[in-house]
Image 1 (cartoon, one colour):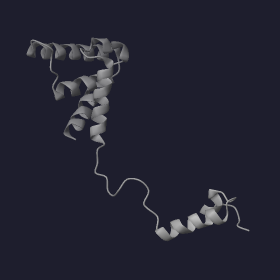
Image 2 (image 1 turned 60 degrees about the vertical axis):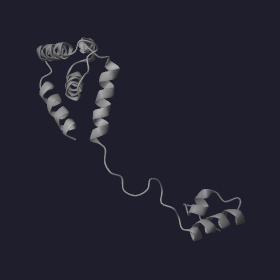
Image 3 (image 1 turned 135 degrees about the horizontal axis):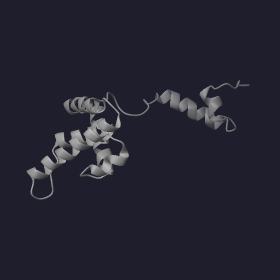
Image 4 (image 1 turned 90 degrees about the vertical axis):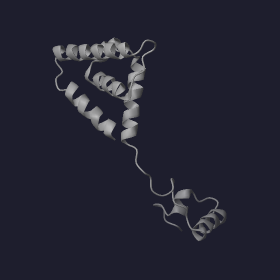
Length: 133
């Protein structure tokens, strides 16, 4: 929850303006941040959670044509964004999933009506708009 709030704030800060100069400033910010990440590691860089958050938020503020400046692929940025959204919308579910079970008497009545009236469709048995006659 805290990460989604932080992501929202960073995305808002980066997306405040949409002029060409602002886009270049964001691209420069992304490149500088990636250089700092690369300097932390000798081998393949390990992106921390906050690094991913910053890059995902910056990608929302930049046009896709400039995404080539990221050190990760566009699919990765989209996946990170989906993960942030998925984590934001997690909530406890109450009860069992699906339709609640019907009472045995009602089920038996439905089956009996279907057997006794083979030409009736489900709408007549259900009590739809047709008259029984």
